Image 1 (cartoon, rainbow, N blue to C red):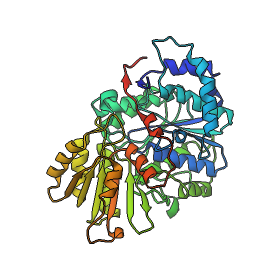
Image 2: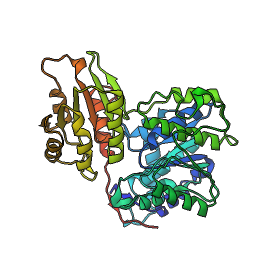
Image 3: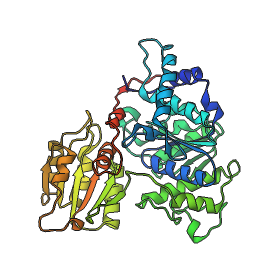
Image 4: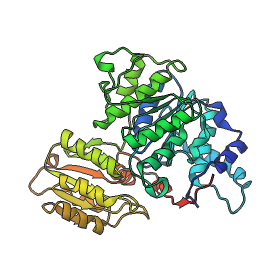
Length: 428
């Protein structure tokens, strides 16, 4: 019932039945393989610092479904979510019985309706999957942003970087400026070709890029602006966000000071999120769920947290490249705890353990029944808690569960189950 239906017809029809709320809003549409959420969070924070009322639409959620729809970083109230569901249900009856809308299609229109009702000045609008046929692609944005292109969701987006890039580039609209941080040459060539066909000005951002419209001070050179999010990859995400702000300066002016405040105060949980418990133990949460993001996590661990006493808690979905993710991450830990992800799509921890044992024969490796069980096994004999550095990764679903168990996010009656979906055939 919840599936992923690749096509825009149903979403367009539902939006029309709801009064086409997207026509009352301005958007920055963000697609890409990794870094979408972080880039969206930076853009939201910058424009909020500039005094705008900013809507933020992202997925999946870590704990509460309400995370998906936010205004000025306030989660949509539960009562408003209930009201929107009630108002949208009669509209769904105008679709034939054999053409059920997916959860994502419905929530996309609910978000548009909510943002329009609150008269948001700008909406930071993240794609769900791909771009070209994603439900979010019914909007015409002020700018189209593509973070990067890497392998993920190949079963739906294509088995080459060129095919994946073609799907992501589908958010580029005729004459609308586009910005990308894609550095993979074959993928960038596809994006450049698509932008040219759409007569869309394209700005390509690199880590060394700097903003022509802002003073080239040390603090404001791209990648130099202080961002509280950990990891070298956030430099390129901040470069992309800053370039997007530059492209839109004439339409939405933002001062240097507002940009600085926005970046300094950005918050995006579950991505290289460091938690320190009262007993001194440090836990790093990162939703690395594909090969590219696993490599980014490995680099961050080696550079930022070079301790040898790492405990890795790893849970991955079956439809991901779990073998390669295990091979990338397992050599970094002295102790590895394999857990199931709370999803029907979870990879078998026993199979993960086999790969980890081959990749890191020296590590202590345990198969656990649950994340809670893994936490009970994290102690290091003869060592104090602050010497035992724990990394929890492999899936954003797992990170969300960890935040709940650690008490850093309120339980939401297992709303993580609302992240579940499977695909349906693509429609035009």
